[in-house]
Length: 513
Image (tube, rainbow, N blue to C red; front, side, top):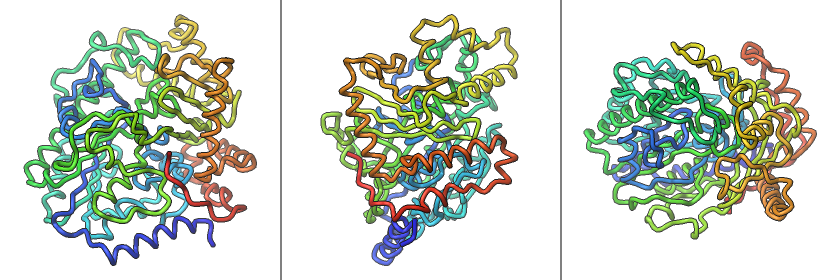
């Protein structure tokens, strides 16, 4: 048996079922997957007081809005690979940025566009894919393949969508990927938003724990990016409505991870992992607001079940259909524990492997290289300084000065972020923004032990390669040797080989409990 046999078996299952199931009938639901960049739940329907998002709010009110939705890793390529394959990053292999050469272990890993294409769907993508190898995702239609962070020709997203949606009457899967709210946070493009927010209109997200006029300027334009995103999504939904296909289309909107701010993107904190996610499916979803823990790894089994297709073997996620009736809440225990992870983003500058688990009340973060400097701490501060220096502003962003004048609990939280201990533990009922680490509290040793046990069980069940100290050392050595994108372009990553070279076929992966 080969090292990727469990994935190849899943692919064989998919190909076999193609002969048994043809989804080309007009009654098969279309799927419109809308993805935004680098924004958390700073959306009106999630209770954010500053967000100007009427179109997204309306979409949420017409379907199910998931209030506890998460990504398995707060990074662009990592997150996108997970919702397209239904796997955790340590299972699919894309645990760093595609632009730095990270890639799937196996290009034959089953994915949504391939499966849907095989059963008769037209497949399209507008905006970046950002997963390697790109040829593993057989889209029939591709437009605006760059990240487009300068926001060029924004009306083209809806125009290309109109062309694709109206091409013929076969069912379609369209992934549309917008550049907002990725940095640079641009205040206004072609008059959008019409009424931009200023620094005096907002306060920074509370999970950062700091505030200043300069930081408010950045955050105000972050909100302006979200407002522009909302306008573009409104244009897209209008195209869908005018096509006459809205009633038979599953519309999914999600953010690929949290904001690229302090204690957000590239962390295992709630600010990085928690996202907006909603699904509208006329006639099949009762409008509701679900409190259940859901993950983007649940999207692949959900879509396959929606088209009456056999779900790929060994996916760790769960179909979301039980939550479509509007009656679900935390007491129904769709998922008792949510698991996530972090590896790296752009190789050495961000490398700091972690694993995390949370239940309804508590969150635990396990650092695999404890008590060492987290390189992304200073890298994020430098980045935010650079973003602000390019602005016409009377203010200076000085994050070290901000921290020095902050309350002790905030200063201590940033010290832990800079040099994390092995275990961090937070009571999310009393401390939703994760400032008070309880890992050494005598009153919390039982919950710490419980969460550590569940985290270990999950890592074993999902064949986490970094459970082996020798593999962790080898990965650390390889990643830390690549300190620039120019080096990455010359480097062929070896982890797909040594992660599995000494072990038998990974075991089947049970569903999350």
